Amino acid sequence: MATAGTAGTAGVPGWQAPPVAAVREDGGRRLGPVLAPSAWRARWTALDDVDRFDVSTRASLYLLGLLGPFLVLVTLAPVGSTTQLVVAGVLSLAHAAACTALVHAGVEHYLARRARPRRHLAVAVALGGALAAYGVVGLGGLEAPAEGWTPLSAAVVAAAALTAGAAATAVRAGVVLLVAAAVAGAWVVGSLVLGGPATGRTVVPTAVSALCGVVAAALSFRFSAWYLGVMAQLRDAQAARAALAVAEERLRFSRDLHDVVGRALSAVAVKSELAAELARRGDEPSVRRAAEQSVEVRALAQEALRESRALARGYRDVDLAAELDGARSLLRSAGITCTTAGDELPGTRGWPVPVRTALGWGVREGVTNVLRHSRSRTCSVRLLDEEGDAVLVVDDDGRDDGARPPGTPVPTGGAGLVGLAERVRPLGGRVDAGRLPGGGFRLAVRVPTAPPAHDTPLVGAPVAGAPS
Image (cartoon, rainbow, N blue to C red; front, side, top):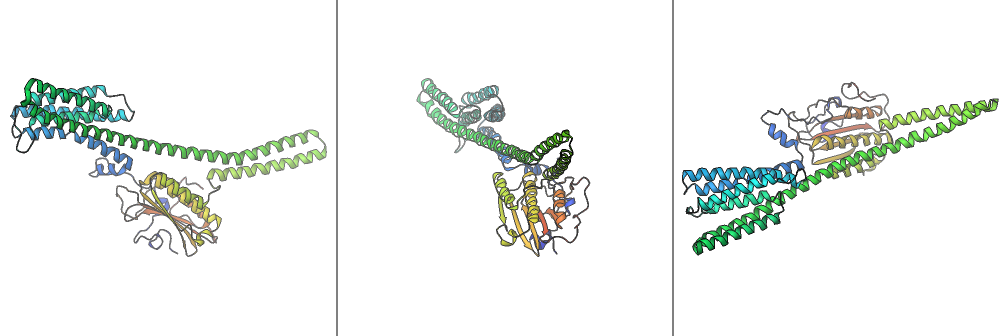
């Protein structure tokens, strides 16, 4: 009889599942050494989609700061002197560094993680003003390269756009646009008054270009900060959902504990009080009734002990259909596409209750591993009826560093999957788990639908400390 971990059952040629005792509880998805050649790629793959969006958005904002020095130096290089290149290069690079620092601090302020970065804002505005002033005073007489901007226009546009974009992460975009429009208007009016129409023919196009750059940069940076805020809210919502799930599970356990232990203890207290009252009467019939009540108290205590142990081990009220519905809902809320198959087949619905209960625990363990360890985007849960065996197969496309080839055992020190194997062992079942050739992880649980003739040994070597 083929196990659920063979190619015939699993449906993946060449895949062989390792023993469950060799499966690490975290799925074996640990990153490689930090200094390894693939360390940066491993760090990137370790991030989920929310973290990747955060990192990529921030990196794009930081890299936009380099466009200012690039525009200034490319425009100035064909027509400027060495001194002008050095001064313009130093000013533009210092301004870009100040704007990058302002972007970082401004985003943190937008996310309500720090106070408004007033010093960063002042430094960026001062350096932007210095760069624009040098463009007007030191580069104003230079001609434009063929089919290009004048160095004056490049310096002013770079200073204005980059400063406005960085400031928009810490100040409302409307305020930035109003200030930029006021400064540009004052510059144009002053140039026309002091320099006449000839100067205006140079200043007006530059001012218009700078304003266009300011609008584009301010809106772009502000929307990027808003995107990061939405992602931060999504992360908080995920954390709140996880905390709510934990609280809900605690509430469920407290209800079960109250139903099991509270009822039994109440009955024990009443019958013990009755037995004591009867014993105090001293007559033979009362003593005999007191002894009967004591026997009932002992039976209640033993029943409560058995139910408490079953409750602690989690054997109460596990239904396969409910676990499948819960898996779909939980994975969907975590952003993982979940597909199920086989639960609607008549053969699977006719499985004995102990078999369905064991597979329900398999669904719970598989989904827990997907949520905690796999960084998956999709997950499939299949129920199969093969040669008189009930088979559960949970596949995910979880990514890892690829340190081990597919189908190889994954070391384990945890007891999650071992505990699952202990649950199916009395039914003659087995658990297999391992990597898939195309990437991802598979958990397969096989339980005979007929009662076993004898105890079936646990798959793999015994693990010290495994639950019994």
